[in-house]
Structures are given as structure tokens and as C-alpha cells.
Image (tube, rainbow, N blue to C red; front, side, top):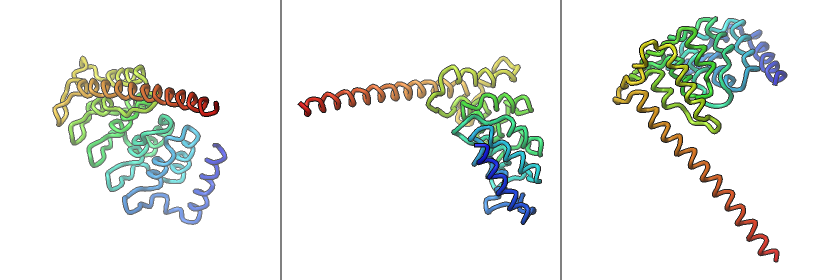
Length: 231
């Protein structure tokens, strides 16, 4: 993996040596090199964080906005699969100008996006420690708590992790937890969404377990049928 990352940086270096001004060039959607790096490498593990360090060291500006008003930090936090976000990558883009309070064209802060993946526990705590606002509302009046309550389901994400996420987000409230009962534009508070999501999660788990049992039975019946045919 380290060799692959090194090859990526070598190619980037060759291109930038020929045309250094392209480091902050934008495509038709306003995306810059850091936007692309965030989307393509952020959920592949800590080894790829070196790419962000390299780009920013070459003059890349992670605070630049694309046409959706997203910084590279938004792109970094919006990845919804793979490995958990590396806090060193977040720290790097913050050091070079991106802000945890920046909002996209839907009013989402990076925290709104990061909490959707229940794997990002360390990254969420890091964002909160660096000034992310748990009370920030997007244009449909969702706080990060609303988004976390509707967090994405991935195999292996268990009830304990869901509860840890809730504990991390409740920690900075200092208000008796009233935000859990504050409704969004649909009139739903995070607590209601969490309960509905919990029910949906249980149904999904039951469905998966049922599928496993059916799969096992099918293979057992197939094996028995094969034995009968051999006889």
C-alpha cells in the first residue's frame, strides 16, 4: 500500500512540476484536486493521508468551494463506506484553511455528513473537539443529531457502536439533552428518528439472519439431493 501511495505522489509531482498552477484548478463542477483526493482516497485507510499532506504542501487550498459550496472537508466527511475517516487527514485540511463551520448549499456542515457513517466515531469526536457545532441546522432543520439518528447501516455495525455515537454527540450539549427532542422541518425529533431507525435496523438484522438460515437450509437440501442422485 505504501508503494502505491508513493507512486500516486510521484505522478502528482511530475504533473505539478510541469504545471504548478493547476494545483487549485477547478473542473466544470468546481471541484479541485483536494476535492478529488478526498472523494477517492479518504476511506482507504491512514496510508493515503500522506496524499493530502503532499497536496497541501504543494499549495493546494482545501477551503475552496465547488458549485455545491463544498470544501474538501465536506468531500472527506461525505464518504459512506470503507474504513473510518482518519483524523490526521481532517487535521491536515483544517490546518490549510478548511473550517468545521463551513456549510454546503444544503446547509450541511462537515459534521452533518460525518455522522451518517456509524464507523466514524473518532472523526466525529475530533470534529467536535475542533469547534463543530452540534446545534447547527441545515435547510431542512436537521441538526447533526438528526443525521446521526438516521445513520447508515453497514454489516458489522452493532448496537453498541450506535449507542457510542449517541454518547459522543450528547456530550457537548450541556442542555439536558433537549436537542434530542427538537423537531426538524418534518416535525421529527432525533429521538423519534432514532427509534424508527432502531426498529428498521432490527428488521434488517433479522432479515439477514433469516437469509443466512435459508441459505444454510438450501445448501443442506441440495447436499441431500445430490447424495440421493448419486445413489
